[in-house]
Amino acid sequence: MSYVEQNEYLSIDELQRIALDASNHYSQTKNAQVKLLCQSENATFMVSTSQEKFALRIHRPHYHSKQDILSELHWLQALQEDGMSVPEAILSQNNEYVLTLPSSDRSVRYAVLFKWINGDMPTTEVNPIAFKQLGEITARLHKHSKKWQKPDHFQRIIWNHDTMVSANSHWGDWRNAPYLKTSDHQVIDEAIHQIDGSMQQLGQTTEYYGLIHADLRLTNLLLQQGKIGVIDFDDCGMGWFMHDLAAAISFNEHHQPAEQWVEQWVNGYEKNAHISNEEYARIPAFIMQRRIQMLAWIGSHATTDMAYSLGTDWAHHTIRLCKKYLNNQLPVGI
Image (cartoon, rainbow, N blue to C red; front, side, top):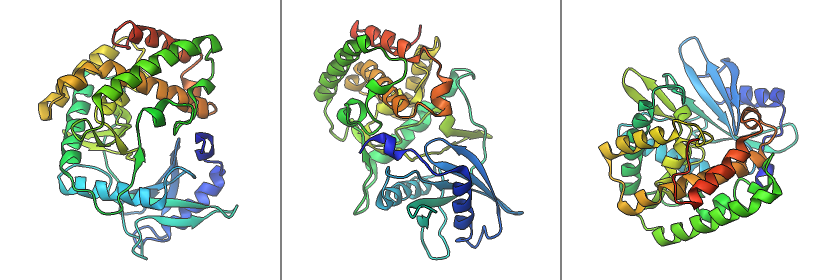
């Protein structure tokens, strides 16, 4: 399946209708106001009553099965029980956490209603110390992941070298990225080959590989009165733990402060957990692997606002970072 098929093709009006339909399946949100917050991967709505607010997520097609989504919710529940501030799913009147809703074209959409998490979202414009907080909370997630006993029938997406950067990766073929020259393919291929060898040497034992968030960027943190909330577990799955470091600077690896961001993230992580020497030595490989993975994402999402916002030079910067990586440098910064 190509990732292009996973893009939402329903109109905003149709998604709004589905969201209104979904809100009527919960006693707390009957006759609530429904407002679209964003449509990037999934469509997320704010559902408001006079008493409280909720977040409604309508899943894009062809990405996660119902069992995949239920498995995500199992992990979220376990994290809540461990004292972490993460989204809490709400049962419908029919005792379902995941609704299956019809659309006008006879397809279906899965939907989940979550309690609202208050807080402010940091950005890369803030002091690099924000990445220290990001590292701290990521370490807590990883410690939980390593000790948690997954329930029967637990299944989530698999993130490995092939599913991230091969021609048949979950997010498409990196060669389809806009503004990428054919003459630059060779340097990316060389980087991919070198990353592959590094990952094979590391392996996928439980010390290095397990259930991760997989998209834990500043935009998925909510800060309020010293408490950190983590949101958007839609991409969570089985992957290398240090992939979460690479994901933390997604899209922004080429910016001048990126090396500081990595340093702060590592410092924060080490407050709650330890990065082994084997993982630390491969941080450049993880960062480069993620950057190429996002090249594939942009190729399959070329018409999205996010892809447009990156401008015409993002692919060029990716080639520059590949060359730094191949020269045994950290592939970040100017």
